[in-house]
Length: 483
Image 1 (cartoon, rainbow, N blue to C red):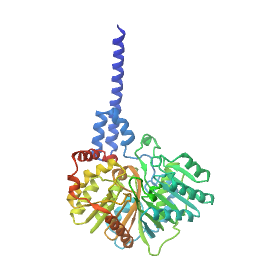
Image 2 (cartoon, rainbow, N blue to C red):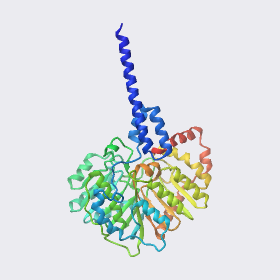
Image 3 (cartoon, rainbow, N blue to C red):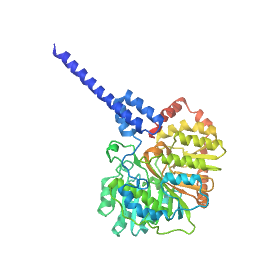
Image 4 (cartoon, rainbow, N blue to C red):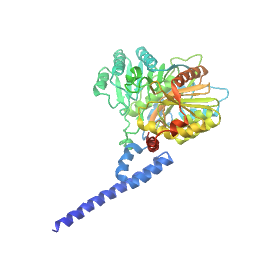
């Protein structure tokens, strides 16, 4: 009879011990959240949940909650790093091609400081509006490479298109071209090891981004390298929204045709994209690529291009500030395309202010989502934007995946940044900003074609939804910091 009370006491002692450890870990984690979370709302949410429900919140925080990527060295910023020292002389050559204007504006100065790179003159650019145009151009660039190829994608599939890419990379490697292939291990989690092995056997240098490298990132699956970059011989480069998958050419079984946007650059700005790849490769492998840094070609027409990398290792919220600067600079119009629409408070307020100031503000998003959570969360933002005069369009002809924006008639941008917190704070992204009226006209035409294939939302689209839809939208809104 005396054994049972002892067992009960031991059981309660074990429960209390586990509870004490859980709450201690919750407190320690909440201090980390207090010191590192970038937004006030996120800080409050994590501190409360980590102390109130540590059993669930602690593992969730260490997997999803961190907003600062630790250990990544940006050669453009850290002059004392091994990478920066190795590239110092070479990147200084790149700065000789800086675009000089007689009347520099504060917007131009600010965006250069944000990018840690200058606007570069002497480029030719080509807008690639869909998957067929993009992959015809990309594959031509691969086949034309004579010295080296830098290839980086977020998603790589071993489907028909993925195998076509693999065959071309293998062919160039066997022809003596140095091929470097970088992919994100989370975005490409379904990529079979046989795909990688086949590339390596042919002499292709392959590595995943290694987003969990470093003690501060060990448990994280929230940081991803969302960049899509290709550089051929330092002469041409490509950047934009396309990944490697059959849906970009054949469409998606349920979402329909896949509408995306990419950009080809020939000239000094290709080397700016090369620099971004070299930084990512250095993080993944600790190797420093020895590549040429003198522009192979420079156009006499001289289209100015700024390459703006952004990511969770930045001192500032670079992508969000870029978008806010674009909204501030617009006098007549700013049209924005994004597959996901869960913006932060800064961008939301700038969208409203620009519309209230008489700027033609239009946001183009998909009608059919590939992510239900972000689809519902968007409804929590759209109503107030419509009230301020922002026009929101839902693309009808398949799935819209392009990430681009147009400012007045003077400039436009194409890149990898979505209008959501993940792109603003958690992903490694890159955007090419082109300051050219002819290119802006091409982008304007692209948007006008997309608007013709879209429906404009009204307040009734928000108010007439049933109660369950409105509740789902507000509930999804709570997850905005990690979407």
